[in-house]
Amino acid sequence: MRLARNRNLGWTATAQTLLAATGRYWSAATYGGIGRGTVPLTAELLADFCAVLDVSGEDLAALTGITPANPRSTGPRPGEVAGLIWDVRRLTAAQLDRAVEYAESLRD
View 1: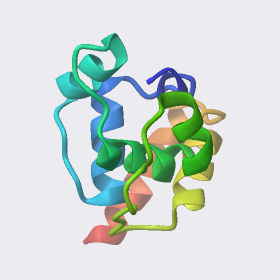
View 2: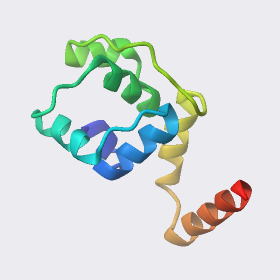
View 3: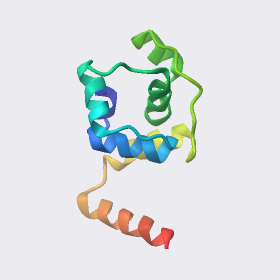
View 4: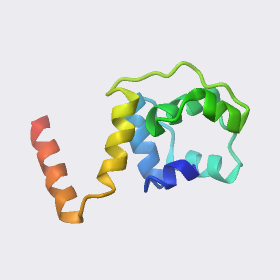
């Protein structure tokens, strides 16, 4: 969770980002529990974090002692998600608003 927080992802943003990137939804409170150590980290969740954070499964396995499951992705490739999250941190609020408006116009 510290790696997610380092990318300006709080509990809710983490839940929304992982849903968009993997198609799997867990509540924001679940991610908070993982961060506090009250909810166990599963192989599936660890695989989702690998996809969004662009950290290798081997590295996260070494840190957590859990081998990630095969990632399930319904969206862009993992490295693209991680790069986008990192780049968005540099945008001003006005630039981010424009990007969101543009993205929403593409859905219509």
